[in-house]
Image (cartoon, rainbow, N blue to C red; front, side, top):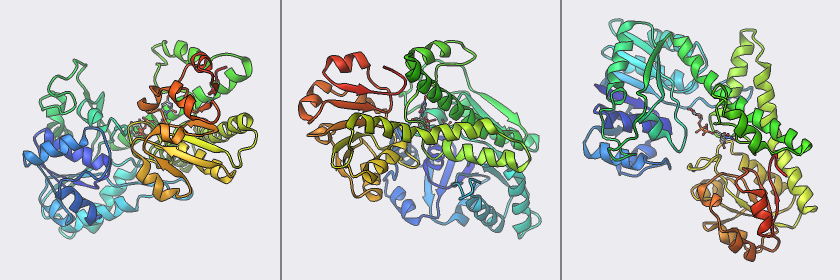
Length: 449
Ligand code: UDX
């Protein structure tokens, strides 16, 4: 099938590249002409694991192309994936202006029937508005638009893997033919009939993904409900951590034990600095707003949001208690990305920590395996290092803010010899307190003694 993808962020690029890998002809477009030129030249504009391999492979098989001319992409495809951003507005609502622009563009350019697939995360009922906009702006009464909601469940850092090995594919449709078309688009993935660049053809055996057909509003709701529930789980673990600190319990032992109940599950119960990134904070806010707009009070989500906002303050308190005076101290910050395996620093809790330290007059020496160039543009007052050991040299304290594997396996014996004071404040609970103390460190983390 001829497909187009509008929006070349990580969701759009992963969608385009993986669907090309699955055998479709895909053209990707973006209003950022510079990004398109970069992609045409074979460069990958973002860091996302395995994306370079899928893009290169799709390029070689000539299944994937790029154009800055959205009209050309729209006219040449039967199905169009909308993957544009829906950032939060000041009041927390999702800003849908990019979706609206794309709808008008599709309506103006389409000369033949189009299947319009909304992949961007949007509040429920956006699909209905999208269909209305498509019809209202269409210049040709003969052209029929079908709208589908096909939310993505792609985690940054494992987005390629998540796309090619999904646990479920949700398609919200208005008619059976749209469901059949989406099944055809995803058939190679559902039947695992593609070359997998992640596992090099030897994918682990797993339960085949289910394609769930729902209404458009249900599909839209599933995405927000899923992310909000995960955020709720994290905040639950974080309140537990606070309680453990007061009662002398160990949050890792508690969350491990409760997670073994299959009704709860062990994932997303890691206590620490809390969640960031471009999805959870904004999806949570948008979901609360959506509920309020129809008279439903989603108080528990508001509490999850509040708990998360307070994490940085709690961390700052730990730093203040350990360092006494922060002003003039040299503080090494390990990790700036909002989580490991990404260069994304949007809504990163680590950046909030850095800003708080700078406000207090600390000298911040930061490191991150992937996010340095983005952070440098945003926070020029920080001294940056590629090598974590350089960042730790002469530091009065080390603050762990992102759960990178490189920091999990850091040689603290060596680090200890470089630091001015053996003090580690761990915002991600990466190390065993007993082991750190054995190595001669003062060590503080969340919810453990
Ligand atoms: C999320 C969803 O997981 C994905 O399905 C959706 O499509 C997009 O949003 P992502 O934003 O990439 O993905 O990050 P995720 O891996 O879910 O982590 C979100 C944040 O929660 C990170 O800041 C992470 O550090 C934090 N987190 C995660 C915790 O603090 N504790 C945990 O136990 C898990």
